[in-house]
Image 1 (tube, rainbow, N blue to C red):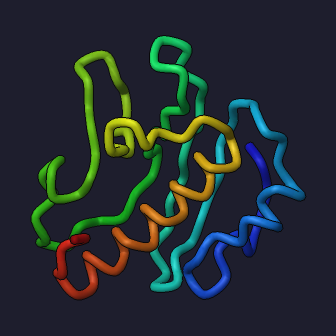
Image 2: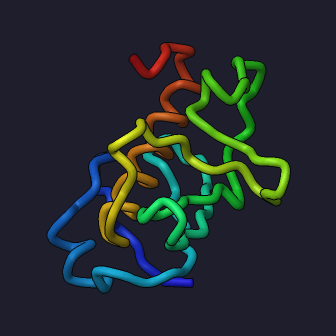
Length: 122
């Protein structure tokens, strides 16, 4: 697990910092506390079958009564998966580790905001 902090100051991924601290490719875990105080942990792994990264949500926030359906929360879960995955738009899947980390941070921040105010992502 990478022990990294302050990768998303003000809720936005700091791509320069992410690029300076992480290799272009690799597998591992990252933890993030959102601006609203929710704690997340992600496992990020290369998926050779689809030539992009999967981001597994090992620890996510409690949806506190909000719609927690897979569609509303932009998650996937296959029968063989232990954890939910972040759902990426087809053709927009992260192709390198740095983008996978950035996208996981965005997902965490948007999820925390959704939980707090109930507004959908779109």
